[in-house]
Image 1 (cartoon, rainbow, N blue to C red):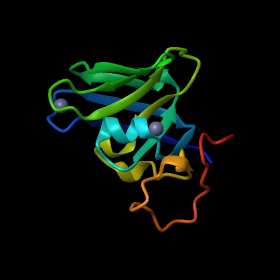
Image 2: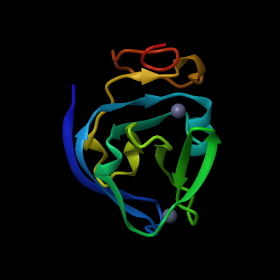
Image 3: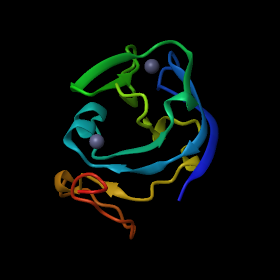
Image 4: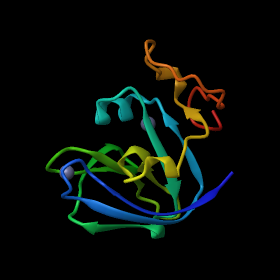
Length: 136
Ligand SMILES: [Zn+2]
Ligand SMILES: [Zn+2]
C-alpha cells in the first residue's frame, strides 16, 4: 500500500536538512548488517520514494559507499545516517524514517534481511518478514 508524504527531516545536529515530497513506494525495517553498522542500532526503519521527490534544503551530506551500486549519505558533523541512494536514478531512494521531524508519517509495513536480525532484538508486530530482500 502506498501513501504520499510532504515533510522535512534532518540530522541530529541540524547541519543537514532535507525535504521529501511524493508517493512513498515502500516503508519497512531493514535488519542487514550494513544498516546496523552504519547506524549503530539494531534496525533501521526506512521509506522509499522517487529520487526527484527528495532534496537537501540545508547543508550537504558525506557519502559512504558500502556497495558498488549505491551510496549511503550521512551528516559529516554528527554522523546521522540519512539516505541510501542507488547510482541508477530510476530506482527509488531510501530515507531513514527516524530522521523525519515526524517519524509517524511513514510507519513500516514489513521487515527485510531478517537473516541478520540480532537475537536479542525483536518487535511485536505481525508484519511480513523476509530473510533477505522482499523477493528473497
Ligand atoms: Zn548533523
Ligand atoms: Zn539494510
